Length: 234
Length: 260
Image (cartoon, rainbow over all chains, first blue to last red; front, side):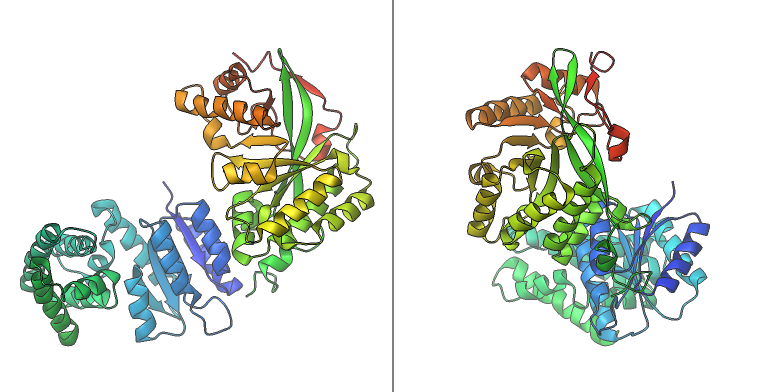
């Protein structure tokens, strides 16, 4: 089955060349030039991959970030990549926290972009795409990748609407997972994980939990310190 | 924000002739004969763009907040496409509730557009559709009253999904209750869907309207709907969307070949 790809790029010539390249490599490609057009397409169709430019207008607005949040909410299984001629650490952090698997800087070769997409899709075919993004680009062995995926899945399950006991269980498992990662994962994988954690809603939730005088609050405090240390070290 | 031609996609959409109108028959079934009741006008965006698909087109339009301008363009396109159809059949044109609320001059616009295309308002049904509650309820109801006074019939679209709910039924007081395909698909196999259709038939009748079932695509569903008491049907099984010229002279269709 042909992978379905949406290219979101306001520059028509670039959009067309990307569409032609991916089409020639066996993808079924749609192209959108505007944020609203992309949102309408994502609402109507389930894409395997969305590649979006960070800026979709001549202004300095970063509509691509808005699209990432939209796709993550509507189509959580869709993989997302960002391309930009205006890279910044802030935009990259935000993009990753909104689920982008990679942020590529223009100019980049179409072959390089296609390799990224293919590698993401192959990984998902093997493991499913929940939490796939950081593991994919991080490298490391299968065990590391599985551990990264499981860590991120667990992190998403720390929620304020759960009971203290349930959160405590998830947090203990998170701690075990983090210990496993620290002992086994290569530095590149940990760097990817750190980037992914920076600004993520799940981590924000975890940090809020640290003030609670509960079992899960105490566990969250310990974990938050470890994650903060990872960010500094990274 | 530019599309392939340098202008925005919305600009392209609003260019004269950019929109195309197809028509799909709504049939009134009696015994084994289905007679033409009316044609629903269905808008398609410019060929070669993502907006050719109606769902993408109107989702895009709503995200752009351009319902008023695009709805007016759809009305013009529909009138141009159907004005000279032989037999001057009744036609139904879709309009967002939010357009009626925001476009205080819509009734005057419609009057002039119909005059220009020599389409009497008595041929016209406006199908009210909405994806969010109309922000100005008073303006919406005022425009609706004016349209009724001019002789336009009103249908409530998408019943069973979205915001076509009891409030809209009370506010709109529709002549036609159009049950969405979501409810109709599979009604022959799912007794719960049939219960909803039967309930809406009773509701519409007591509120002084008639029911149309949309999205009829298989003979079993058609049969189940007819047995439940539905008389007005629409869907690919009984008539596909096509240019108005393809339906020139169309008045009725035998159901012998398609019912079970």
